Length: 248
Ligand SMILES: Cc1cc2nc3c(=O)[nH]c(=O)nc-3n(C[C@H](O)[C@H](O)[C@H](O)COP(=O)(O)O)c2cc1C
Image (cartoon, helix red, strand yellow):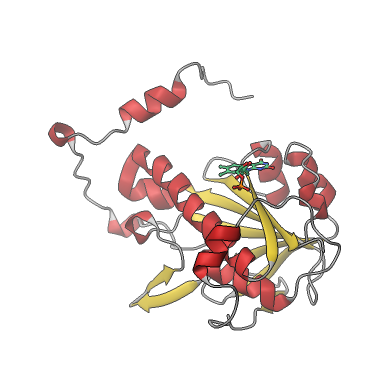
């Protein structure tokens, strides 16, 4: 548990980060120290290029909205690499570029895109079980550690067994400074809004592909952070979502 006195911390945060006409901050942006736009794990790690996303087919948007439900039970079938590609693209993929800027499928305050995506793979055809990081510009998955991590991650998610039983679990982290650089403390609001947009894109894409998904906000933050190998301060988990094939 945090050592911060948290009796009123949520309310205090919201009060302290309100915009008001008389005190609107006008931050000078420090372009020289602009944080990196996306994280990349270099080195000799195995990297799997994903198939190009298919912009046709799938259930139409209105059906996807209508039939979306949180699904917590999945069949034991594996997802295809094409499914994984489509889900990553729909949630965090690049949809257009403007000079060096990569605009994504989900909106982001100031186009700063503070959210990173990790994928826990339990069952995907063509991918070994393990933990991956989504390389945004390459639309590829970089293997961080291989092996069956579903049980450990499930335990970190308050023992929610769907994490172990799903085909994949998306784990979204925030690179905090990427957003505080421009918005100061108000950035934390935007980080969670960004994560919500990303997650709903994933949910709707999952329905469109005849898959089930469930977002997860309940987890032991620092247990998840430890599995991901991140410090929980500069980068910290904010949201997760399981995806799998529907039970017939
Ligand atoms: C921010 C957020 C956190 C959630 N966390 C969990 C969770 O930890 N475990 C879970 O089973 N469902 C979780 N859910 C799913 C909700 O329980 C679900 O959306 C709600 O019951 C409404 O049902 P529906 O999604 O089928 O419309 C979460 C949903 C949201 C939006």
